[in-house]
Length: 537
Ligand code: GLN
Figure (spheres, rainbow, N blue to C red):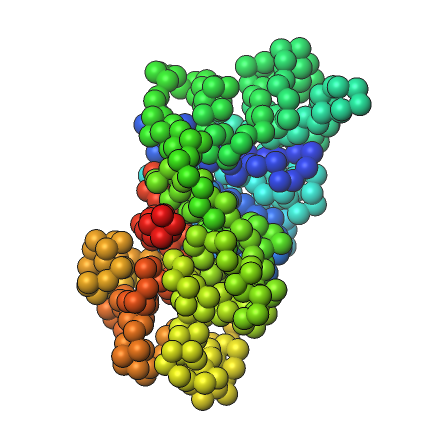
C-alpha cells in the first residue's frame, strides 16, 4: 500500500551554501503547479533553535511568519510568493523541533524503556514530519528542501532519513541535488570536480541523486553534461543548467526551458502532457524588465548590512513596482546613521520613505527622524510594525506635544507611553513563539487611505509584535490629525494609522510584506508606489 498518493521531491545542496535551493524548489513547484498539480514546499533546517523567531536577522536574514503564526525560515516567503498559496507550521521543521518532540516523548515514557537514538528515533521523527504534509491529502507533490550543504555534521540525520525513505517501497520520491560549477578565469574553463565530489559525498550517505542542477556563470555545453552524467550515475537529460539570472523571478522560465519539470515527471513515470503557458508570470517579468520610470525608495532599517533581513519587503516593492511598470532604486539607509541634522541630506532625493520593522533601541531615533522628515516634507511614507510605532512616537512628540513620549519597549518610565505592552504580553517571560503572531482581523474605517487601498471593510493581516498603540491617546491623536483607520474588531487594537493632511502617510502594525505574491502584489505597496508616482510629477 503506498504511503499516500503524494510524490516527494527532496532538494539537497552541495559545494557551497547560498546556491539558491529555495529558488530552485519554488521554481520547480511553480512549473508543476502550472501543469495543474497541487504542490507545497517544506524546509528542513538543521539548526538547533526551535524556530528562527529568536534569531538575530544577521544570522539567517528575515524571520517569515505564516498565516497560522509560525515563525519560519525566509525561504517560505519565496515559496508563497512563487506559488501564491499559503504555507503553515508544518512547512518548516528544525532540528530543535525534532529533538524537542523526541525528548518530550521520552519523558512521557513513550519509548517503553528503549535507548533513544539518532537512528531510529530522530530519523523516525524527521520522516514523520516529512510525511505530515502528504498525509493531509491535499498535495500531489511535496518538495522538501534540506537546509545546509551535504557533508555538514548537522544535516546528517536528514540525509539518513532521505536514504531510508528512498528504500521504502511505499514511499515515492526523488532527489534533486544542486551544486556549483565554478568558472576558472585563468584557464577559461568550467570545472565539474566539486560537483563530482559532492555527488559522491551524498552517495557515501547512501543517497543517489536523480537530478542534478548545476549553478553556473557560463553555459554548460553537451560535453560537460555528458561528463557530469557519466561520473555521477545520472542520465544526461537529468543534468540541468541553472545560469545566473538577472532576477530570481526569471528562474522558473529558465527551468522550464531546461525541462526540469519534465525530467521530474519522467522520474516518477508520470505523463508529461503539454507544456503549460506561464503567461501571467511572463507578463509580470515583461513589466519588471521594461519599466517606464524609476522610483527612489528609501528603506530605513538597522539590519541593512544583510539585505536578506528585509527580503519580504524588498520583494513586495518589486511586485508592486511591476504593477505600475516602475523600476525601483532602493536606497538602503542605516537608521543608526540618521539624525535630525543630516536627514534632509540623506533622504532628500527619495520619492518614498519606508521605515522597517525591528526590535530594541539601536537606531530608533534615526527612524523617528526619518518619519519626521517624511511627515513635514510630505513624502509618501509607509511604516511597518516598529516603523508604524515610530510614526506614532514622532507624531506624539512633535505634533500632539507629548514631550518624551516613547514606546515602553525602550523607555518604560516615559510619562507618555504611546506604544505599550499588550495586556496578554504582560506576564510572558519566554521569548520563543510568544509574540502576537499570525493572521488577525482588522476592520477598516472609511473614508481613509486604508479603505481606498483595500476597498474592503474587513481584512486579515499577519502580525509579529509585542507592543501596540495605547488607546488612551486615541482622541488626542485624532484631534491633532493622526487617525486610527484600522482596528482589530475583537481586541480594539489599533492596526493602521494615517495622517489626513499628507499625500500618503500610512503606518501599519501588521506585516503586509508577508502576503505579497508575484500574482497578487499587496495593495498597500501598490498604493504607496502610486502615491510616490503622483508626488513625483
Ligand atoms: N519591537 C516591536 C514590538 O515588538 C515591533 C516588532 C516588529 O517590528 N516586528 O512590538
